[in-house]
Length: 171
Image 1: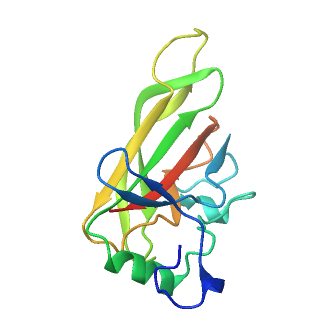
Image 2: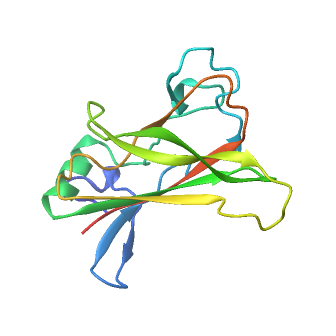
C-alpha cells in the first residue's frame, strides 16, 4: 500500500480485513515479546521497567510505516485499534496480585495505563487463566500503533511472562 500515493518505492505491506468494517492492518516486525523473567534483575526500587531497556528487549516497529505513510493512512481513517495479550510462563497462572502496566503510544509522549494480574507458580495443569487481552481502540489516531510497554515491579518478581503484540488496524 502507498497511502501518500507518491513513489511506489515507499509502499509498505498491509493486510485488509473485510470480515466486518473494512480495516487496513499493519503487523509489528517482532510481535512476540518472549516469555521470560523480565524483571528478575531490575534492582530493588519499585518502578516502571520498559521492555525496550531490558536485555533482549526492543521497541515495536512496523516495517515501512514511516511517519509520512502513517499520516496519510490516518487521514483516510476514523478509528484505530490494537490488541496486546499478556501471557504467564509454563507452570504458572494469573494470581490475585495486581500490577500496573504502561503501553507507550505512537506519539512517544503519552501512554495508556492498565492493570494486569501477576503470574504465580501453579502445580495444577488447568489451574486458571494464563492470559489477559488488552484492547486499545481510539478515535485519536495519533496514539496507535503502540511502541513499547513497561511493567511496574522490582527484582522480587521472578515469574516468567510475555506479550503478543497484535496488528494495529485503521478503519
